[in-house]
Structures are given as C-alpha cells and as structure tokens.
Length: 113
Length: 401
Image (cartoon, rainbow over all chains, first blue to last red; front, side):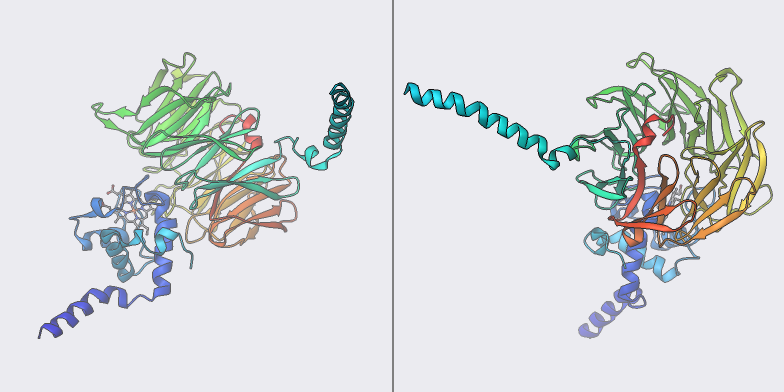
C-alpha cells in the first residue's frame, strides 16, 4: 500500500514534466532566460516586469500564474504567450520558477538548444 | 678599478643606443599606437563581458570580463573615444579603457538600471534606474556620485521606473517616467544642485525616448496608449504635444513580446521612422508638421528602426518570434527592398560611421554578422557569446547616443 502510494505520488509529481521532452525543457529554460528575461531580467530579478523568484511567487496559486503567462495581463506590458507555449509548458515553467530549480540547471549555465 | 669603470662608461651608452634602435625597429611597438575611431564594443549579455572589435578589418581585439548582468545593457563613450561607460541591468556602471582592454572602475549604483547618457561636455554620466526609480549622475572621471534625482510622483511616496534618458545641449538630461507618465528635463549647469522641469500627463507608460540629432526635440513613445509625446526643448513653455495619436484607432493591438526601442533618430530628409507598438508596422512622421506620413507593413513587431547614416535606407529588426529577420526599407519609395534572415535572435544592429557596412548581433547563434549595406552580402561573421548591443565609438560625438 505504502509502496503504491509512493509510486502514485512520484507519478503525479512527474506528470507535468513527463509530457515535455528534455530537449524541449532545455528550449523552455533558454526561452525563459532570454525572452522572458528581456522584461524580467536575465537573472529573473526584475526589470520592466516584476521579479520571478521563488520568494516573490510564493503563495501565488500556480493556476493564476499559468493563466497570466498564457493570457497575459490586460493593460500591462505582460503579453499573452499562448501562441508560443502550450498550457502544459507554461505550467512546467511556473513550477520551475516557484521551486527555483532553474537556478541550478541549464538555465544557470545559459545553455542553448 | 678605474679601468673597469672606464669600460663601463664606454659600453653603457653603446648598449643604450642599441636598445633604442631595437625598440624603434620593432613592429610590435608600432602597433601599440593606434586611434580609436574604428573601435567598438559588443555586449555579451549572458557572460557579463564585452568584446572589443575594430571595423577597419572587422576583427575582434579582445574581451573585458566581470561586468555583471548585461541583459538590456547599453553604452556611451567619452569624448576622446577611449573610454566606454557600460550600463548593466543589475545597476552596475562600468568604465572600460578600450585601448588597453581594461576595466578601469565598476560601481553598483542601484538595484536595477536600464540605460544611461553622457553630458554634452563629457563631464557627467547619468544612469536611469528602475529600482529605486530615478536618475543618478556621476563624475565621468572618477564615477563619484554628483547628484541623485529620485523619480517620485503622485503622493511623493511612489517612485517611477525611469526610461528614455538622453543628453541634451546645455548640460541637460531628459528622461521619462514609465509609471507616472511624465517627462523631466534636468539642468545640471550647477551639477550638485540640478534644476528640474517636469511635464505631467504626457501619456500612459512612456517606454523609451529619443532626441533629434540637433538636440532640439525629445520624443517619448507610449506603450499604454497610441501616439508619442513631443517636447520642443527650445520652447519648454509650449509644453508637451501629442503626435500620431490616432494611428491605431479601432484596431486590435497585437501582443508586444519585446518592448521596441527608440535609439538614434531614423531620419531621411524630413521623414522620421519609428516602430509602431502592437502593430507590425513602421510609422513615418513628417517632421515639418509632425503629422503621419505613412505606415509600412513589416514582418513583425519592430524593435529597432535605424536609418543608414546617409538616410537612404532604414533597417528594422523584430521581436520574438520573428527575431531571425531583418528588413530594409527604401526611405523614398517607403517599400521594403530586402528581407534578410541572418539567424535566430537578431537583437541589435549598428552602422559603421559612414554607413557602408552594418553589424548585427545574432544571439542564438553566438555570432556577429557584418553586411555590406549596398549589396546586402554578408561579409564577415565573428564569434561572440550571446551578443546583444553593438556600440561604435562614433557615438561619442552624437547628441543622444
């Protein structure tokens, strides 16, 4: 039973990532750094847009942030990205942003492709 | 003993002479004396370095490292064209000796900055900051703080992000307040005690500003509404006038994935060319009466719209996802005469001083591409790490750059 629960939880935590290939994940991190970075800063510490760090995003519902990324925010400079990202990809990016995992991975190295 | 000394007296001058002649004949030594008029820097945004390049043979001369977060970095030059002042996103202000390829001094002057300018007399360097919002002014030699201008507005507790900072004749700096919708003119005739003239309600969210090459007109582009705000610096009392305010009436705006830039002033005759916001168009302004003289459909959201120094052609690059493309507009027919695809992530371009070649940074391919501006042939490609802004020393003698 415990084992099954464990497997289930592993499965759940991996679902977001499971649909996105590791090549695409690298592309997304590159995109986040370079293209989101033009407003949020290369290190995501903010610019024209606010900082996107785990501490600034803490407590904000993931769905709300994913919707912000997909639909943008009306009357602000945050544009809708749904023409370039799927909702799953936006969810995966939000997860990376909220957990701060990006700091240690390909993102930090600025790896392309 | 005496004899030994005597030999020394005879030998020493001979030795010295020999050394001198060696130094004179040595080709390496000749190369250490050079001008800087054909030099430039390229911002390598991710690695916090700048590359120093020369445009006579299109080669790289070296790299200066340790400049911090250079996303959105820009640079201005000292009037002797020897020092570059680089403004980094992380609030860093770096002074680089491009001849010796050395970082002379670097200060962290704010948490988050966006750009800078150098005064007409070359003595003051101004930096515009996002957080805390305002402008700081430094001595160009020592980088000591000379004046601090917080961009307070409303109830004076709020501070606005500052954008579109340029120098203007008469030791002035002009800039715009993104959050407040204001244009400020700071007169630094007495540097420690700046006089500030504020223009309010100039329009919602000015995103960048520029000044005409004669230093007379300052124009801020608006993100939050259509049009641009125009200020005649010769007649401050006339106030700010709105121009092009109906170019997009009734049309749905397209998403803006990267803010356009107003850098330099793309002029041909009496026509000026600027990016439309939220439209895949370049707008043409008739500078005689500041009316709209045309709209040119282009490949994507324009980011930089830059005229070749002779004004005959205007080059345009675009926001993601169209940032693999450059387009060239003929300034007389207002037609697109060439579309180039240098590679993914074309972030910036810079013309050589007289315009026969143009350099483009191709970020995602880690290289610079140099084009002939008549034949549009690619002449060279140089390696660079995630290049963005390219700045040549010829900017040193141009107002607003």
